[in-house]
Image: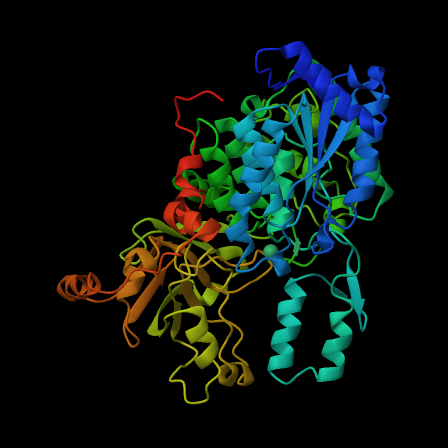
Amino acid sequence: MAKGLRKGLTSYGDEGFALFLRKAFIKAMGYSDDALDRPIVGITNTYSDYNPCHGNAPALIEAVKRGVMLSGAMPMVFPTISIHESFAHPTSMFLRNLMAMDTEEMIRAQPMDAIVVIGGCDKTLPAQIMAAASVDLPTVVVPVGPMVVGHHKGEVLGACTDCRRLWSAHRAGEIDEAEIETVNSRLAPSVGTCMVMGTASTMACITETLGLSLPMSATIPAPHAERIRLAEASGAVAARMAVDGGPRPSELLTPRAFRNATVVMQAIGGSTNGIIHLTAIANRTPHRYDLDMLDEIGRTVPVLVDLKPSGAHYMEHFHHAGGVPKLLAQLGELIDLDAGTVAGGTLRDIVAKAEDVPGQDVIRPRSAPIKPEGSMAVLYGNLAPGGAIIKQAAASARLLQHTGRAVVFDSVEDMAARIDDPELDVSADDVLVLRNTGPKGAPGMPEAGYLPIPKKLGRQGVKDMVRISDARMSGTAFGTIVLHITPESAVGGPLALVASGDMIRLDLAGRRIDLLIDDGEFERRRSLLKTSPAPAMPKRGYARLFQQTVLQADEGCDFDFMVRPPDETP
Ligand code: FES
Ligand code: MG
């Protein structure tokens, strides 16, 4: 039952007066009693001049409000923090949990019966869904949508897979200063999120699969009129949920839904960041995310969606080919269609309406996959007792079984200082190792896992090498890259024991990443490590909270005190 303005009233003994006061203040905005007596749908405003990905948020907010009002409820827009990948120092991951807390507390603090969260840039949808799962108020997610593609010299460009590729070409001397400047104006030609299968697209597809957003919400391009209509429809759904009281996130975020999301994440060639976010979201529910399930699904679910960085196309092409509903249809029995959605029914209803687009080759049938196995695999081994991730779909097949000599960098700064040094002792068969870049080490687990190819090797035409770290990697990057090595080196993980010149073996088939030194030497180095200093604890503020309580990658990098105990109801 909708409570509208009465919800969360602080009565201090006189509830009538508290409501009287609340109404007196809100009436200063010109609202009528009729408006204020209705169920309330809260709408988050994550517009920011620092967040071009959310540049269409004002238009989406207007459309959501229209949908809410046409359905007889009352929309109330409120701000939360907004995070853009390029404007979030030290990292956007450092701020994700802050946004989750901000969103959660503002939903709890203010009266609303349902909530529409509008987000999209990498960390924002995870933060908003973590918040929604904790509050457990009926929630509809409206992604801002992907950018449209750019064009340069007859070639299609996309942020930011091509940012990296063309910058590498510039570094290698293949593209001159003037041309790289031109390219700079063409890589992100509209508002919206990166239009490759990066973290933003991955999370939007996962959100749609989890049933938290309406069909096609992941793929409609940000500037399209269709996205405005989707926002209006989402407002209408939220207005209905405000009255019905559901479905709540706890009804949708079930083990079945997490499994479906994992199948989709593998089939789209999704971002490795999606694993950390799904883990964090699950930890806000009574359920837990299982890395072994991720690996098992990766062995059976093929990559079907042909998008950069693993494939050829961009989000708008995925959309015109039928989007997530069509993908779910192609996945067939791999998806549990009994999972519910905010639209009221189940994924079965959505798959039944999936569009058939003759001749499209972006969403492949299972008989002709892009890759027969899924996009990501989980590695263990003496370097990663808590697990590590490799995005095999974006790796070089010849490097997936590889033994090479370690070239170790102790930090991002150390790497930046030495990687292009012509004197650096490095060859194409070596394994580049970067450490102290985990959740606590850097801090905020930067997307530094995509170590650049040393300039002198790049000039010789080397495009890929095995690179390993406790960092993350942008979903838009590619290469034979082992990430999220857990526990991280800054808390004494075995990555801290590697010395330049050691041999390291990547064994994808065996799902292992190992340092090839004997056990005695391993223990000797470990005993020496005990004396090495721990990362400095910030003296105050959010950084201190982060450093004290952030969990490792295999636990989703949330704060330890935000995890919901499995036996606790919201
Ligand atoms: Fe916002 Fe890529 S920078 S989604
Ligand atoms: Mg990204």
